[in-house]
Length: 294
Image 1 (cartoon, rainbow, N blue to C red):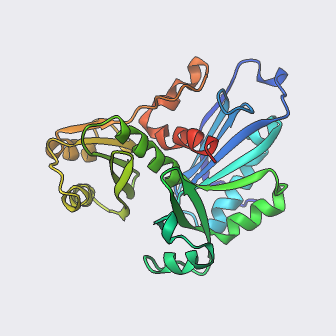
Image 2: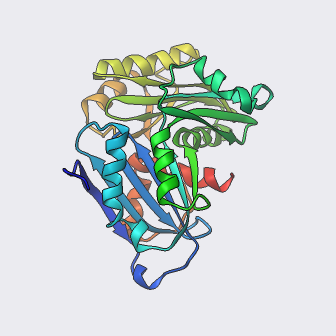
């Protein structure tokens, strides 16, 4: 039992006539981020949106509290309304590294991750292939993995790294660009910043920040590290950053080609799901094409 609710239901959308559509092989993506959890339900072929739930935590929660809050919400979520045969749990990890296939050894991946970050003992190490002959190795809270093993049939669940989908989107966009492009997922206190060129990752890192000046500094640093000119480099942003916000206005002064990401997915959906094209949901929609390739 949850003593206190520490989340609000931000979105709860359903396809018209959903109650009569009880196909047994629907799939769901559960995106877990520090600020909340999103659940996207799709048909068995992952090409039609059926439902969306989006809950946002009202304060910073430890992993155990996140799980408790999410477990409370499940009873009113789409996971209880629909027959779901496969659930893709998508975790946004602050601990990760990219390894070329030639350097990847599963028995040594934990050692490789420890070389670049201080992984807490409460995390386990996972890996996931990218289409560019590379693996993303990342940390996943053991408590989340243990909880899903208790609640769901292991054949129903697969864990993926949230940043893998974002990287794949950057790589795809770079294939159609004559020059390097920058992309960033900007949330309230952290960002993922990437530079991509000709279907290859040039730079990718996570930064924590407190002020808009910190945000600007890390974005400029990412471009400086890759030799790019802020005024003339295409810079695509998504996440919680809003048009007209102080952060966006500050970035716009320094980055001449900044734009918000827009999903170009051909997933079929009804008009109420048009919000999925908003830059705030870009990294969620990016997971669909990524998991189709796994």
